[in-house]
Length: 224
Length: 293
Image 1: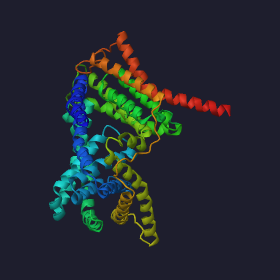
Image 2: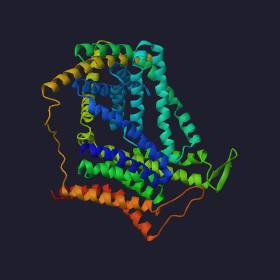
Image 3: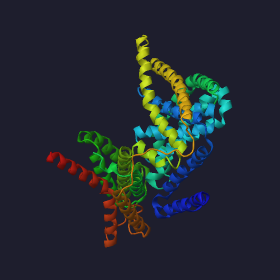
Image 4: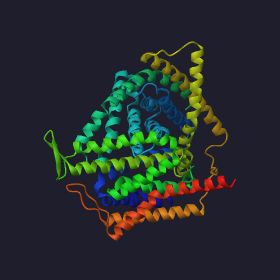
């Protein structure tokens, strides 16, 4: 019964909604499909997490890292643009794997938007931060050993985050991908993109070692 | 007052998604204007009158920024107003810019109302059964945040008592915030592990446990849910029939004002003004009771 239901959702309901919406909202069909691709890309991660994760310690560790990244955003408020969220996501991924990184990133987006404002950008933030975490999990070993690589990864993820977020803004406003508007959005956000990239590098270089040793210690002390 | 917020979370979720769906993806100007005005009135009903001016000072310039800049990005349209650097600035692009402005502000206002009404407890109640582990993580993180904030203040007060002031320079600020953060991390992770042990001791993950919740689905929730689905269905069927089709490029099309189209505008109008009416009714009842005392 349950199996049939999920089959029905995956093979009938979702395609029907996506295709139906694309036909119905012809003017905005690119934005519609992009939104669905974004939301559905998060689903397999969440699904696997629900299926697999049974260890209460790991669950709470992810909750704590998420809360720390949100509190960090508040703590560093006097320094505009300096947000340790990306750094915390990357560090979690380095020590507890890509899935934990994805979850920390996606949940940080949802939770910080409870206070900073939810909007159509929430799914895109979830996916962007989630994917940064997942990628950091894949590169965990080299990132731990090589500090230059870590800095490059931080800078790149700051830039990628901005680039990804603006794609949807343009699709939604114009209906099609308007290159001029995308370029304008990137240029007007360039200052913030730069601050993100720089602050990610600073946070990663300063935090990765000490937090790493705290996490290693927790791992041995509590047998994670 | 949050009269509208007293409905069942599932009904509220369906309602917000319906309005946002139409406001974000249907390009008819009448629908977008009614979404904008419904959202603005609802947001005003939720906000204290003292804050209206402050919010207006944010939304009005944003609207003009979106509206005025569009002709710079888009040279579609057949009615050039004037030429700028050899590129035509067209009437159509200008009008389309206004339409985008209405849509963007409308959606932002509705999202603001959503954030005020769909508090995290309602969100968790809705998703707790579909994604139990994720919602557990989410609710624990939400609980950790105020706890960590309190601890953060304790740590920084202790540092100040030790004479470790933060000076005004950037690096000093960064350094002092950083050491507070490090102390926080060690403390909070230890704390989290103890919580995990305590949860395990109290039987987390054992089968047959139920969740506590305050929400009940009553008759009035049923009424609102069916009204909402009906109005959304009417609007979407109307869109599918092309009854509300409207184009800005290459030439601005005429607004359809057949009786059927007017009926459809009315249907979505009711949908987008519903929460405002509910709030007003709640406020009137409240005033009446106060007056009777």
